[in-house]
Length: 368
Ligand code: PLP
Image (cartoon, rainbow, N blue to C red; front, side):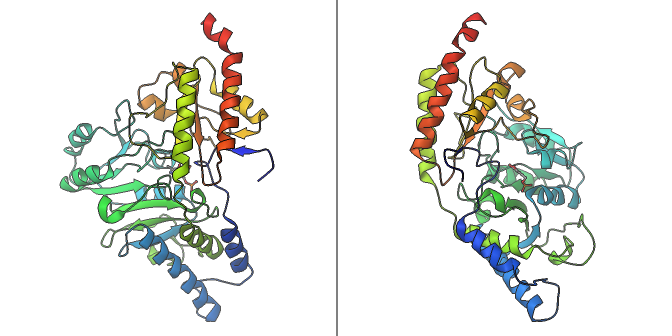
């Protein structure tokens, strides 16, 4: 990365590890189409199947079918649109790739900590015979972790099918399907130090998924299209190189303590819930997040305002609204997400920059 550039936006994407870049480059130089029947084709298939095993072992899902897709977005679309159900329920804080895949899905409410309300879910479930439920394992904006094991138990008791979007959780916390017991799970390579262009939907044996992209019969007939062998191989290398970054929690917690001591009215979203160790979403009272983003960008620090919009525009976060924040509060929050390469010095510089803006806007707050 550039010198003097501080990257605190790991939930948006991560830099690929050098071993990943090397593995991708080596494979790209070879003609590898896994559908070809000749030796090179068999080699492509062998490489892809190796990554299937690596991925399912990493998730404790040895007997699940691994369907490779081009993105987490595509895997979420496949899960939401490819399952036969008499109703679809999704939490109100899902990523846009779930919310927009099934715009008329019934929304499951969350409490003020951003955690799905189990009683509310149970009430909704009673309206269906075979519902599909999608609740993310960890939220991309706040890092709040959902009680997926309990949710899955309720869904199965109601005769439903359970999908979880683990795009943000995978690589940051332990994700074990044998405990969560979900039927479908989404993961994505570029959030764990892998390349863009590879992700996967893992499907429990016996669960039928209708393909949304048709053509050749690749990926067990669930997703047509020549497999992206370099990206999939890079995904496998990234999984083998996942580092549990315990230091991110220490650095994140320290930053939150300092910021709260500087600005006691600061709100940290999901502070009282279980959260990913690397994520923090908090307000600078009275200062719009657009102003904050520009300030940090000028200081060479990359952070984000909730979810990064494809248009680059900052909109009011549906996640914070679902947690009960009004527009004035929600539009003063930013997300800081740390990663394996984040240092104490990075965080000190972030806090110094935060403090400079906080002090500069003190008059604004007093006038309000
Ligand atoms: N789900 C969550 C929770 C995410 O944070 C993201 C990306 O930010 C996605 C899905 C989409 O993944 P991809 O970028 O691979 O399409």
